[in-house]
Length: 398
Ligand code: B12
Ligand code: SF4
Ligand code: SF4
Image (cartoon, rainbow, N blue to C red; front, side):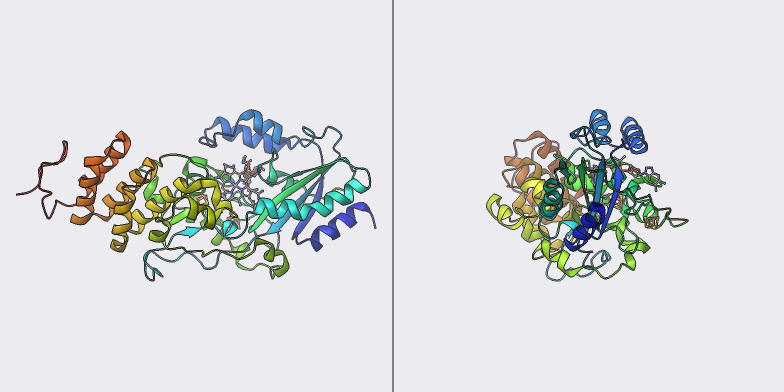
């Protein structure tokens, strides 16, 4: 058996659902796509992204000058537990938020790095140099996978593995070994454009082209700080990532039976639709205990609770009013300001009272603005607060 065949066999035994090889030449077309998108502002907001990074990520030899081959790997992640419910459906005892399926178990970066170790060992035992990449390394993962014949790039920009779909995570091993290359697949989405039509924000601006600044996944995972007011209503009940353009994909609707052993690497799955008002009670310690092992950790507490407030504002279930009112006293202004926005969406006298009380003690100017705007969205005070609210509040009705 050749080294290429041995590596592929081992990769499959390790749970990778697709493995292919491509040469270590630069990913020229992908670099051009990345450069164009960067210039057009479609990558704006990713503070760690730059044209220099795009250029470096397209060159597998950058970190390993004697590289000859790239082994591209796809690992399955659990599919969403159920399709997105309609608004208000399945809310049980209180409204729930949605977490993208890839993040429901253990952080995939760790899983893929672990699973690649025997492949690295096989290469190194034979005297070859080898370097791993999983997502955060400087590599264009999808482009490498497509050139290595793992699947095709869908109109939702994701790599679609034939008979498996896009619920996969990608990794590469760049090596000095001269392996037998595979050819790119001659497959495409054809006339289907379901993902482009389902995207609630219009983020898929052209087939295969994503405007980062419109993608829910960007705002809920990558963006630090305040989420613009015009974006908030579009986020729906997503609190980490978004799977809508994958859930609709017909290739994902009929996948081959998932490798149960591979999925066990993700460990116990967290609740895919956690209660939003409960999440709002997490302090730093309980947030750590609940999410430290998961990709959700990336947002830290303040980012996740910001997202939770937005989801609560969108679901607009009055049962969440006490939790949102309590969040107006959080020590993080980011959470207080988004909680104020959510209360404005709920509206009514109780929300208005809570906002007016918060405004009296609030020192942060952005949170004050959010409180004032939210008060304007609520109905008039049912019970006057017993004092003249600070300007520019309208006078309480007699
Ligand atoms: C930055 C980033 C994001 C940004 C997106 C920024 C952007 N505009 O690309 C944000 C935070 C929004 C994001 C979201 C998601 N991401 Co992300 N992300 C990345 C990251 C770190 C870099 C991507 C990148 O280089 N973009 C630059 C553009 C130019 O490259 P590209 O997206 O690969 O685009 C290719 C295609 O669009 C294609 N193309 C170009 N023109 C055309 C035209 C047509 C017609 C077609 C069909 C294709 C096509 O060529 C491009 C080059 O290969 C990669 C990891 C990595 N190091 O590569 C993960 C990665 C792409 N993300 C991943 C995942 C899982 C997601 C989410 C599904 C998570 C979620 N559930 O919320 C969403 C999907 C959103 C979507 N519809 O794409 C996986 C994708 C797995 C897969 N099956 O493809 C990756 C590879 C991480 C990993 N190692 O597994 N992500
Ligand atoms: S992840 Fe969501 S917001 Fe982003 S392109 Fe897909 S459907 Fe649109
Ligand atoms: S939904 Fe249709 S167009 Fe979009 S990625 Fe899937 S097959 Fe391609």
